[in-house]
Image (cartoon, rainbow, N blue to C red; front, side, top):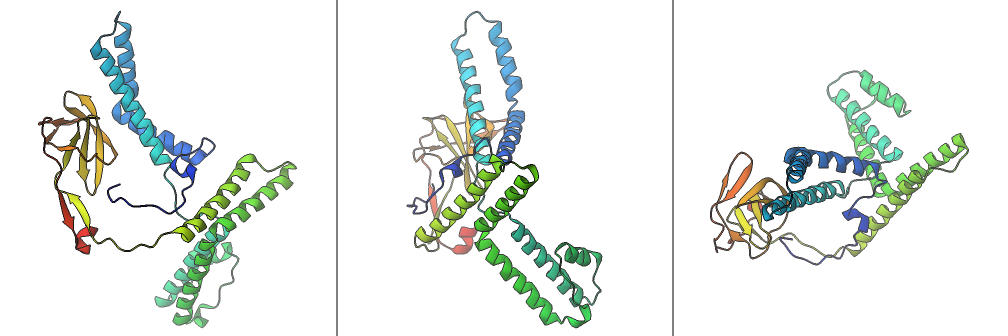
Length: 306
């Protein structure tokens, strides 16, 4: 962490990973891993290395380095794809009630727009009202003030549902499970039971975080690095500071580093270096540098936001 602090919020263990029965996250992981593999030409390079090794009787030190370098890239790619797939979704949990509340807001906003523009109800408003099983009032009888009030009331109703998102989703899933059991004459699927449990667990941790959240205040200042490139000699990693985040680039040997990188904080003893960029590699011009990072303290809120 750039800004160290103590955390008093409980964190679910599975929030830092994903499980194989989670089809959505598993698909995201596979798609992200494929992108990285295609970008890094992993499969082609594995085949090339295998063909090279088959032609040799005994592997030399350079061959072992090539193998370890490729193995390290594969591990990094797997970790990067898993980290993206396992990212926690802190949004509201979807349920039938939440979807209907959102559609109700759209309906009242559309009615408000028609009144402001002195237009009749269009097909979109009529179809949306039919979907929600709502009877449309005579447009001539609705005042502008009443239309605005209806939009505000719809927003308030949606906020109530958002605060109860876990209970609403769990109830909705239980209704689906009961309907499926009646149709098939069997017990609800295991996956549906897991979804119900996940909804209840997420709601529980949301309440715990609200109870145990420590007192906080706005940041007084931040420290921003003055340099762009940093080298960690121990792990042989190149760090780039770009738009407020550090990106770590893996070594490709001989002071060369891959352009593909992962978000990572550099160690305190990382040295400042100068880097040249080519079409597919970064080259460190002064790997023997001993200059340490320097930082600028920013206290103005408008500069901190930048």
